Image: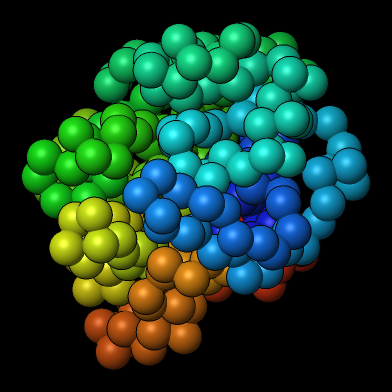
Length: 257
């Protein structure tokens, strides 16, 4: 298994002969005007342009409502992808999207004749009740015979949900955690994604998984960057399980496929 972190929540996961892209955001740095006069600011562009990714077999889209998870260039990419998996709501808003309710699965055919199963799992984009403001989000579990088991959290702030997922699907080999403690005034600054402290808690629940933090940088509304994540994992004695990836570099995380 290899992961190439492209920036923000966007990563290319190569697993079982398939290439899966998380939350495609490929716009260059800019401000996005939001309702109510608010602005979302992208600070850095993608480490790899979409045109240089090669074949993408599936997109794992945690949700479609926010520019930092699906921007203009990312949205333009979707019609060319054979399978785009997201929330049931996204399936009603974007043609061709397959919606996964919590615990529902979708099988991707592997080149070797096997199957990579993608299961939608719960995520909460903020504190309890945040769905009314932030919308519904999904995470994903990737599994298959002879393959590492991988958890992709999506924009989730709930350690309680991580425990549910770990209890149901663990042990995991790799966990891609959307961290960074994103914040918005709409929810009085409450974290919308895992804080660094919550990411450490999640890592304990997901033991022995290799932890890959993403979505910690590249946008102005993220409050806890990769340096803080690294320091917290070191202090917790978990540095051997943390992999903060260099952008644009395909990094092997497990032996074998």
